[in-house]
Every structure is written in structure tokens, then in C-alpha cells.
Length: 305
Length: 264
Image (cartoon, rainbow over all chains, first blue to last red):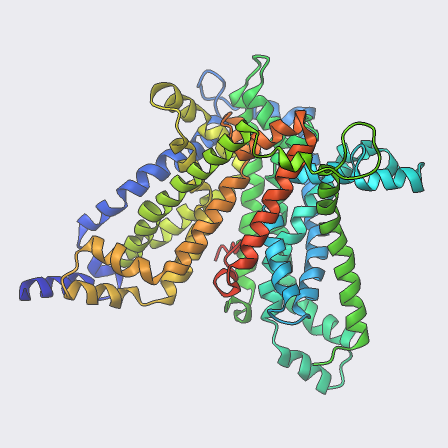
């Protein structure tokens, strides 16, 4: 018993790394996780990264990567993807940020607060099939708003639903799931704004707009920019919404990847899919690195959660 | 505290505009799913809602998605959580690499994971088995960043070293320490993680659609092509279901964990 006690305390004492380093057998404990993550996370990553530099027969070549880079179709889709992601990230961040402010200004833990947070959690995950249905039911043929527009203003663009299937329609759908995500991301930041700052500004004779211009906005800018990057990645990676709404294979990069991968006419081209994916990952990594750097700059007042 | 008129006007105009953006489509779904058949213009019918239970494909797909979610949750409970605890306790040198591995899926969109996993998935389906296990493993990797976030927050909040030390002194073995001592103390973190897992699995479309596995969302999309009213009714029902569920769970447990994706 005493031996066991000594052994017990011995292995769990010192909290620095050096003592644990001695027990090599502890490393066996991570093997099951390594196998699963190796197969289902690292292997696919490696497969895409290495596959981008191979042709369809497994030989090393950068020809497909170059081909994709120069292809006007791929460039067009990539530009569309970037455009929609930037637009909806900004629109979602502004509207979501304002909405988060409206939530914070209400009664804490009141029904409105709880309902808004719960609704945001649901709708942020809501992209895809169901989102498409919601907007088809609203603006699509025989939809709620479309029918009203048909009666009230038959010549307006709302009366005819073709606009929904283009850049404008898709942007409006994307913004729908960006707003709630922004609310979820930005709410904790706004909640941690110290009321003392506002009081200090008021006590020194500052007006409301002066508080926001000189204190509020400067202090929130890094968090806001970080949130914009997060929303950018969110819509840049989105596939389901676009697939169920327009299903035009050349419109966005994710759609193009899916087509290259699963083409039913026998034109399946995994190497092209990997090259396209490679470019996508590069953009996401750049955005996420910027995000990480920004988070590091956010001062301590917000880190406390 | 009294708010000034300016603040109130701003607040309510924001709530009206954004609220309309978010709620009008939801109401439109209700309106659409209760539209009468044929060319009648008036009245409501709940036929689309009534025939939801008699759609065999749909019921099977819900069961399939729930089973997948169950497997994902058991992977979290018996693989990811114990490994995270083990790394925290015994392998401080691996903490940073483990964290990076857990955050890797943030940099890889789901569509890219599909591209990478497709050959392996096809091989497993042909040579071993076509079961939800493969898909569950992919999903559990996909939500790794969220699981890791809620876990590491929970693990940092309690002094697990002292707990483990005390348990070892009293004669508990390693598995007892992990499953019997530490996991109950970080219950909230695990519950948060599992909740995200269910939400993800029920809402996932990209991977299962391309790998041709008929999960809930894939089948709803299919029904949408032939029977719009029913598909819209199902969608609205599932949104309302999750919303009520979220409102029923005490706020304290949930706050800050739903989509908290910090990298640092």
C-alpha cells in the first residue's frame, strides 16, 4: 500500500514538463486518437495538399495547378466566391453587430435576450437546404413576398423571382446565416465593455457620439475585424446553400470542386478538385492567420470570459 | 436604469429591421407549408404537416442521422475527451501539437475534407462496410475545434492535477482517474461539446451529399424536389424543435460555448 502511494504521488507530482518526459509509456495513450485523426483528418489534408501537385495518374506535376490557376472559368468562380464572402461578411458583421448591441442594451436574461440568443444559435447553423426553402417560400415563385409584390407593385424586381438565383439572391441568403453568427461571436465582446468607461466619458462631459467615436469604436475595432474574418471564412467555405439554390457548377469554387469530384458524365477529375481545394485552403489559412494575430492584439479586457 | 430616447429609437429600429430579415422567411415557410392544393387562393390546410410521419424515407433518414450523432458522441466521450485529459495530465509537451491538430479543421472547409476523404471512404465502403461509422469519424474530426474549445475551457477551470494526484494516492488506476474522477467534474464542457455534435450532424449536408449517404438533410433536399410543401414543413418543424430545446436549457450552461471559436 505504501509503495502504491509513493508510486501514485510520484507520477503525478511536479507540474512542469520535465518529469513526465521520463515516462515514455504515457505516449501510448494518444495512439488511438492518432489513428483516428490520422485516417480521417491528416490523411485527407495530406491527400489534398499532395494531390494538388500530381496529375490524375499520380505523377508529380504542377501542370494541373497551373491549368486551374490560368483557367478563366476557375478564376471567375474564385472571384465570385471572394466577392460574395467579402460582401456578406461585411453586411452580416454590421447588421449582426448592431443587433448584438440592441440585445446588450435590453434587460439582461429577460425573454428577449434569451430568445435572441437561442434564435441566433439555431439560425447560425441553419445554412443549406432549409435556408434555401425559407427564401424560396419568401421570394420564390408563389412565395409570400413575391405574391404581395405581384399585387402591390407588379413591375418591381420582387414580383419576378429570377433575381434570387444570382449573386444578389445568394448574397441575401448568405447574410441570413452571417447575422446570427455575428451575434454569437460579438455578444460576449459587447458584454465585456466596461460601463465605467461610459460613465467616465459622461462625467467628463462627453456626448454619446463622442463616446462611440473615441472610445467604443477604437476599442471594438480589433474584435470586429476578427469577427469579419470569421464570417468571411464561414461563407467562403459554404457549399450547401449554393448547391441547393442554384446548382450552377461554375458559379462558386465549392460548387466547381463538387462537380470536378462527382461529375456524373464520367468527366470526374480528382486532380482538378484537389488543385481547386488547394487554392481555397490557402485563402482560408491566410484569413485564419490574420484572425489569430488579431485575437492576440485584443487586449486583456476581452480575454476574460 | 432609464435609457435615453435616442438609444431607444435606435434600438427598436435595429430590432425591427434585423428581426424582420430573420423572421419573415420563417413565417413565409409556415405560410407556404399551409397553402391549399390546386388553384384555390384562400384558406389553410395542414395536410403537409400531417403527412410528415407517413414519409418512410424521411423517418429512416432521421433515425440514420440520430444514430450517426450517437456514434459521434461516443467517439467524443471515449476517444477525444480521454485523450484531451491524458494530454493535459501526462504529456505537457504534446499540448501545443494536440491543440494545433484539434484546430486544423478550422482551416479546411468541409468541401475540401470531402475531396481528401473520398478515396478512403470509397475503399472502406467497398472492402469493409458501408456503415455510419466512417461518416461519424469524419464528423467527429470536423467538430474537433468546438469540442476542444469547450473541453480546454473546462479543464483549465479545475485543478485536475490535484484531483488526479488525490485519486492516485487513494489507489485509483488511470482509467478510474479519467472516467470516474475528471470526466464528471468537467461534465458541463462535455455536454456543451455533445450538443454541438448533435447540431452539426443533424444539419450537415455537404459531406453526406457528395459521399451519397442519405442523412436527414440530404433526404429533405430530395423531398423538396418533388413535394415542396412537405419539405418546408419538415424544415420549419426541425427549426422550431431546436429553438424550443435551446430555450428550455438553462442559459448559464450554454453561454459562450455554442460557437466560440477562438484560435488563441
